[in-house]
Image (tube, rainbow, N blue to C red; front, top):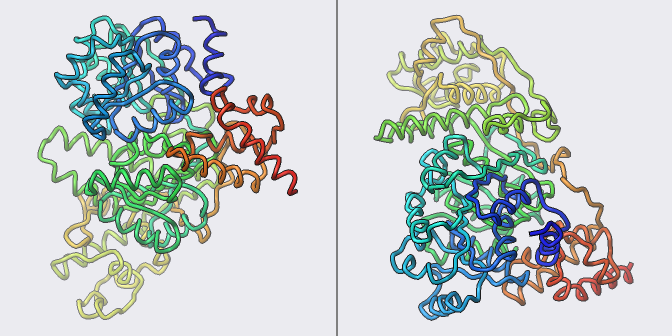
Length: 605
């Protein structure tokens, strides 16, 4: 297909004047009928790489998608752009499924979304050949690999689909895949000499920050209340934690709901729908939430607990700022998190699985303690060399941490841990240990005789917070371990550090300051000057229209489009069409309405 024809389709249906990096090359490979593997960052436009070819040629594009909510999001968006799309999954009743099958038999659709489980069902496989399937797109393809962070065994059966449709090209797409995972994708999906496209993993509009976790709930409340009109995702390790955080945020005036596997399917669906439709601002979730979620205006992602891997962290932070506007990624971290994760890993019976989990965690902990550019660290992990040593928009580049030699305080601390256990036969928690080091003769310190230890009062050079931060760092590095009831004990490396003269250096941790305002370093890929008051009016109009149509607000227009409209203030339909994200279908549906709102704003001014 000629370049001009693809450009016309892109503007007519999607409202864009230009392709993002690698999109055109991937689309060309797809239209040429070649197998392809595409790695593009979240927000990099993976979906367009199979949606546009579906419009440029006949037949059906079969899309394997892992989540019901994602299918609905994608289909809602396609229909809003005038594109015939449908999905088949367990959310449909018998009559709805029958109508969908009938439409497929009549050739009424260009795109069909199904889950991997549905795709390999014998009844579904039997129907496939009659639908003139032109190509197969496998989204979130990293799920095929046990080396990835979302391994799903069902993905390894997708070769059954290929066998039922011999010669049909396959496009595998993912946002995160190491070299090992890429090999698995090609092997298990039986890709035939695929074209490989690897986009940059850099998300320049995201700011990465790590804060030392102290009174984490108060920190989280400070962060969210400072952003009252913004959507955010809070990732927590446990279901109970997700429930508690949502409850506390909601009570503090930040509309929030939980999302985890312990809720019923109806509850999960309802809470996600509230979030997607901007009825609530925050979703507090376990990792069960978010894979492929299409909400583009998530302005922040907070990890309340340390993730298990960098792949998981990158995928989850990637749900912020999909619209290209400045967004923030925050990790609250201390060594206790690391000790907790190591405890869970030790419970894994399979040695191979245990070693793999430990390797992934160690990489994640190194990132959390990284004293240099976090963006560069992420890029190198995925095999990409950063263009600059200083990105100018992560905490370490904006405010470089002070690296401190803590060899002497660390040896004092390790010695105190050893002497408490030797004296009493049991360990103590972090706060009691610090009381001993600072010489605080509390009731417990005196009753246990720890005021008579040689380490009592030897730590006056550091404050309580500094000692707790050092404990956190020694836990992260494996010098200390947590036993029952979070008591501290020496690990093998801690014993060795006491015996040897090894030096210990660490970067002073950051604490979240009151107010937690947005970092100035967040970069916007396409800066647009806009009027806040008009933007809020257009956002309110978008919400009313979305509610009337029963779709998420971003299906009407993205925040990026509204910002451009509130900055440019178009006065004619032709000028309105020149806005990014406005195609012919949306111009016809919404142009007059939004122009009238802009005119009313100008008149009131």
